[in-house]
Length: 155
Image (cartoon, rainbow, N blue to C red; front, side, top):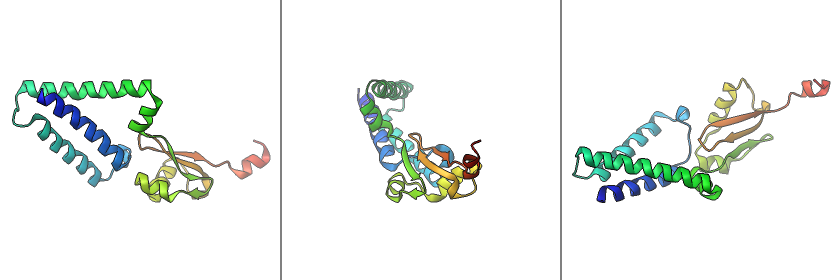
């Protein structure tokens, strides 16, 4: 029974920790951030299985984590409020030429990250960005500004 409780607590602690740390898409993570994730996971598994490293205890811990994940997914499906707490909401960090540094600081997103996402969308200059939005999964979505030459001709 102790393994089940420790696994459930570990799941909640890790979910809370990563909500506090901020969101970064895996493809935008630095090597340091990847190391932190692996270290935290390794430390938590030690706390979950404790001194009992039997196959039964390991399977019990894995099933508990799986059940916690299914429960959280079910709760997110049933409650928008819980979904916002668990996953967050999309956040506009650049809108109509105005940067939002306080939002970027909270998300731990840098100007360079936004501009890199813009370049991946074929945009070369900041003026070509109408909105930059950090999605719930940490990815940065770019909404292109209208091309003034195209809108003036009506095409």
